[in-house]
Length: 600
Image (tube, rainbow, N blue to C red):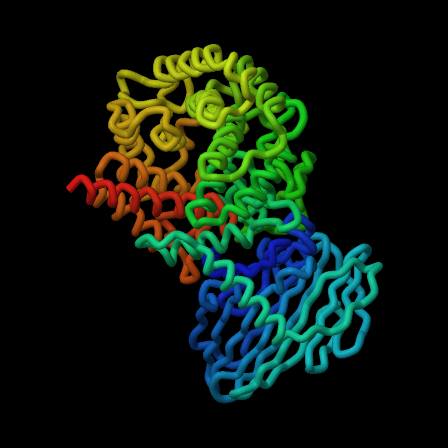
């Protein structure tokens, strides 16, 4: 069975990623890109659904993982009776292919390792046939193939599984090569694994050396920036929310979604996070992906797209997979792509404004598409929508959605005034856009705020709480000092804080169309820390931030959610949104500390 979600490390090459367990198993790999079918899917099933295992045959005494410096090169050390070994896993960058290299190194004594390789294409559904090639094997099924090379003889059994025993002595370095290629391509030549290790280490170290963030949480921020880079798709600049699908928000539950796509709502935070680290090139590439993806009729803008910007993300179930710890259904695709979510318009315009404000040159798209978007939004902001959390319980007038409509008009007004976007034509619209901005603001304050409860609520006219409203000061809608914001923070503390972590909303009070509950949403917990810092509650902000850092796995990785009762990470892993929020909160705390010091 699969390991705990938090017991995995991530390797990647900006085309796809793989998850490597602390025990030395690669249990998840989609090839050749993030949203391709998995050829290792035992993360969501059993060994028979695809994995690559390297395990001692002697009793294991200790297993630990670490990254080699500021890189995505993962080292797994296994100590057992008789000795210890180190497995170095990495994906070479820059060659546009899906390759995994593993170097098995003897540290002490002699360790017998069993190599087991089950390649199963189609999310574990397709058993390949295997042919022998020079110093290796080729697994083939339909359009897919994998080439594996090793300096030892690989045996094939009747289950189409390859195996070998490696007796690893101190000082040994045994290179293993794995590469995905279309089955109709010629078999490539063997590679120099040691040379690729050097090149990969140089790439990541050089990239990390460009980081301009030097605050108190530098190590945590750097690892989060590396995760975002690893989750980016180099050919287009898109960034997936997570490299996995259907890791459950509650163990054994049905809240299992495919996150191998690019969400617009992450756009502004992505830009901000990358720019906090000084990565303008990546921020510009992501903005370019964003503009291409949303091109066309503003009424047809989706909340998410695939990594190339395609729109069709048809959702279906992988019924042959039993799910992570029995959590079913297992899904591929995401039907939420067809939802109407008003907040994405605010996020897109906020992204464009933030990029200009941070020095990114204007794109060539001009004023026309912005004008069309604002014209559409002038009518659309009045409609009910499906909300930021993609609930499947019907459309409502979500307060956060209306607030983000205000953000769209606000950023448009500021872009025209500060950067001259649209020239004289845009200036003529300024009075109208300014009046519209004030109208939206007044409505949200009147209809989204509940005077008796002294808090903004999830939607107009209800009493349900929603942690997305912690973003009110972040987006500039109201200052943190405003009593209504302070009342909202207090309400979240009373109603959504569980064991020191924040829920998105209370599933008992919100009809989201699904059964069961979920864990605490980590981004929301970071947002609460932001509010503490904004309000001058510096000790509480730091305490909550450190509590969140403490639940990262030993590699510094975070899933989407955390279950305090089980003390386990849950949801898709690693989750870009969690790491975006970590970077942002670190910067907020640094900024507010500096402000406090200057005032003193």
